[in-house]
Amino acid sequence: MYQLKGVTKRYMRGKNPVDALAGVDLTIEDGGRLVIQGPTGGGKSTLLQMLGGLDRPTAGTIELDGVDLARLPESRLTKVRAESIGFVFQSFNLIPTLTAQENVETALVPLGLGARNRRERAAEELESVGLGDRPNHLPSEMSGGQQQRVAIARALVKRPKVLLADEPTGNLDESMRDEIMDLLDGLWKEHGLTFVMVTHDSSLARKAPRVATIRKGKVTVTENAAA
Image (cartoon, rainbow, N blue to C red; front, side, top):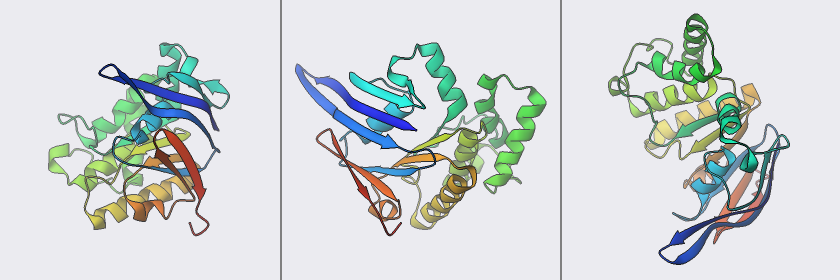
């Protein structure tokens, strides 16, 4: 479970301080699904980075299973990210010179698994996202939707408890957007993931059970009974 209390992130814009997040309190239950929305530059990605331990708050606490990510030494924070948190990004972030199989395997290297174990788990994960027949394809040889499937496989191959997605359908057309969201929804349910997604797409937000809206650094959470 995530428990955020008084989370503030302050930047300097010239000589003026700007709060991207201002005293955010938020709870995300294990296995929950939350969509984050708000205006461009309004703190959505900042909040996601805090949840993933990619950035630290100026003030406040961000507890994951009782451990404050904001106070962990960098070595322990790196271990938490490697073992417990999967990331999916709008731009896929695949290594262009590596095959689909090799890109997925990269997530397992920090876990110290042997080469055979890495190959087997990566192959299984590619199969689970519908790319079992494309392990040797480079990113340039795949469509945007296929590249995002590889990125999802890479996020989940380490079997994390948390999946964080930053505009995962932002570079996809409408039909491919729906395919990727159906895949993510299925994997969320299958693996019991805690799933947090940033999106500007209101049609996706309406399908989520909870929506956190950020405005002027403040977060308002609404429950969607129809989801």
